[in-house]
Length: 323
Image 1 (tube, one colour):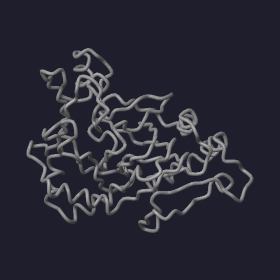
Image 2: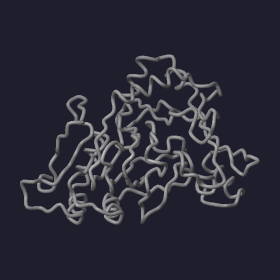
Image 3: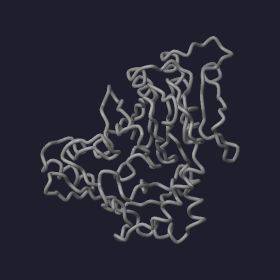
Image 4: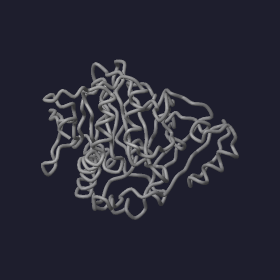
């Protein structure tokens, strides 16, 4: 491993039981091995068991200092890991497929804040792993903060045991209003046509049913998409611990007016004061590392929540999802 990677320490890292979060791998400066994309691919294939073990231990691995410049480079890196691809059918964030397995990250205006979430937590089968790639780094802001899910669970359970008990008992129901056409002005602006990859309502109904999603059609051509109840507090067998697995943020979602988008599984509203304090816990525990161009971030979606901080400078981050 030492001939390809060196583990780098950066100021933003946190340590839990002496384990860095996240892990950062860079080219080893003490060897003559170049940092080209082809050498990164070779290193990934050679050290795949080590990288899988490191991801399982730390939850997130950042590859920094390698010569990854384009969406095509990023796609090649993704394919080197040989993780099975997960389509974005059902996801509500506005995205565009760039090349191969590469999509844009959420295309809503970069000055909008995205709260902490597990990717597609409202889906029946969420992705197990996520890749992010920074093609254009913002000059300020625009980080993708990350936080360990089991740490969040432990802190919220300690502070609000009755709230967590109710979540364990009832789960959450997620309801989102999907418009007839895409609207990239807000974070959940993907239309039902894009979400279900069809312009035919009957096909959308069929695909929604397979995903255990209920649809209620609106007079304006949009649809209310209802999922759940889904479990929030889950037991992760591979690490033998409970995790906080939800997109509980934004019970009033941008673009949906005052529509209460997330409720307990019994239909009762979430307590706004506790939800706001949960968001504060996320912020206290998170790590927000400024993007550098060429960064590739690999996230275990079962171990880590992520968010997006706003920026007013140009920012282009690409994404990919794995089963």
